[in-house]
Length: 155
Image (cartoon, rainbow, N blue to C red; front, side):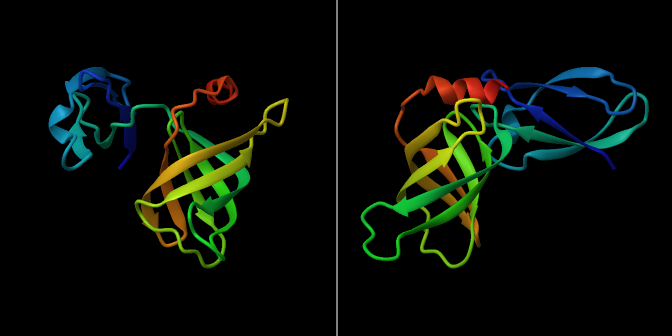
């Protein structure tokens, strides 16, 4: 069964496109915000598929960037090397190699280099939101709006 991902707009509406016949349907997705984000639907063409609603505020770009992190306020072993797998205007996801002491709610400083023409270096403070073994999700804490990051996300 096919899975279709659709982004939910600020007004809780989403557009679902059948992967088989390309029929477009606009749906109210607000009722799925607090619970299950996936539903199974049957199109008028009889095709059954799964719809995954994405409630993110900003587009998340899949990347493969190296960087470093440091836990703010942690003395001693409080940092390491990371591999950033996705990034948006206000968040990023990465994996840590080896053991780490990252916990939900911690503030970390993350530094990485974009693979743009200028090889732009970025350094941001982030709040850890999810920790699943070596996979970390965090929200960028400071509200700096680097134009380099904005341009990078558009390409």
